[in-house]
Amino acid sequence: MSQQPTYTNHFGVYALIESECGEKILLIKKAHGPYKGLLDLPGGTPEAHEILEQTLCREVTEKTGLDVDHCHQFKAVSSLYEFKENDKPFVLRHIGVLYHAKSSGEMKLIGDGEDSNGPIWVNKSDILSRHVTPFVSLYLKK
Image (cartoon, rainbow, N blue to C red; front, side):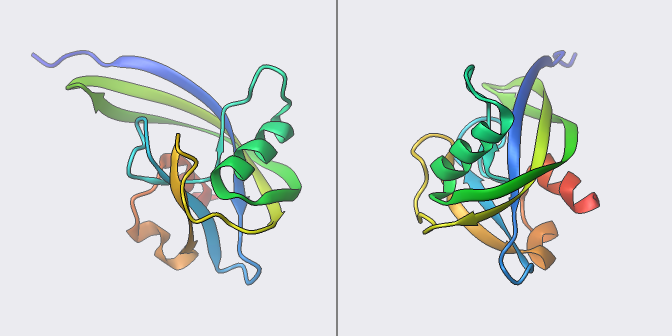
């Protein structure tokens, strides 16, 4: 008899940052949680005192070292993601607001010590061959 999954929820805001030539997307290597080992858009959870754009700016800087110069909201997405923790099944309902963002500064090469093992530029043409989060896949489907 299979065990019924526990459902969890997460809300966050995420940046789609493209290279100047438009051929690459900036992703982060997830270090913890259900997406551990996958590539994801930089972003995260709003703190109590933040509006979404403030969260986006803070999270992008924490995870990549870059500053957000300009952003605009373009899409809200949601997904269900099945995973196991200590052999117990879970389903994550993940809701996110995606922003197109322009950034500047110097990208850091290491992770933030919490959620990210560091940022990485990935060619758009190679993304489907990588292990990515549902949000990256949803972006590609536009």
